Length: 128
Image (cartoon, rainbow, N blue to C red):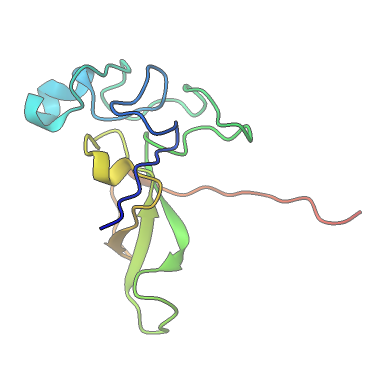
């Protein structure tokens, strides 16, 4: 079975220093040492100010970690009766390799509200 091992920072695990706000040593007291990324410490046990970590090659910050972001597609395809939204990117409580992979889509009940859920607004300049 093919398994995508790409992350927002590259292909190495664990993430390199500065890759994002994930379940780390600073969160171990809250989450338990078995639920954090061994050897990783971003110093932020909960949410971090936006832009606290390095941007990707397009200048976008925090695509992985901090808060998991709702994306436009629905889980289960284009069904008008779908009640599952999709999140990507993991959050400050994510210590799992699987949930931090770029290809991972996590279904969430569409009206669910938690502090680790967010969204991103991207404005694209139109033709001038």
